[in-house]
Image (tube, rainbow, N blue to C red; front, top):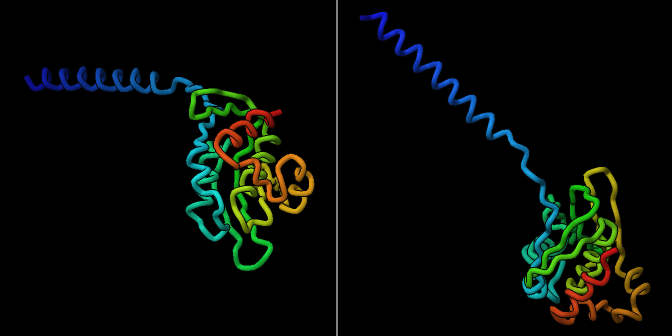
Amino acid sequence: MRISNFKRLAILSVFMVSLGMVGCDKSTEQKSVSTESKVNLTTVLKYKDSYVGDNSAIVNIVNNLPGNIYNVGIELQTTSKPYEITIRYKGFDDIDIRFEDGSLISSSFPYVMKNNALIILSLVKNVDIVNFDVDDGTVITYERTDLVNSYKDDFGNNLEEITKDKSSLENFIKTNKK
């Protein structure tokens, strides 16, 4: 009788191990990697006229801009001028940007970074420099004076036309994508 219980236990053990292996096999299926960045421009515009020292505002802006799925951290330099925002990103090539209305566009890394810098500079009153620190060691820097001078005719002296309203901001992102 004792041997019979041992056989039952052995069979049950083999069954449980087999079941566990089948379960593990299914969990190793490759999941597709999403390159879709959902933006919320209504939220972004809530932080218009914010300041570099308002950590919550800066985080909310960055978390709702294109490329937000690749954002790995934010650093603010507020001790002395020039005030800076550094956003750390995982590198990416192209990204799909999904708007609140469900529309979708594709854009490339260089345009997302430049557009995000322009948007941040138009929203945050006292930021002088926006840095993008990419995980491959690249640092991309945009200075307010350079961008204002380059885009003055299109967006005004303080880039205010970019974030005048939700329609302006959405149009800016959709037309400056490649």
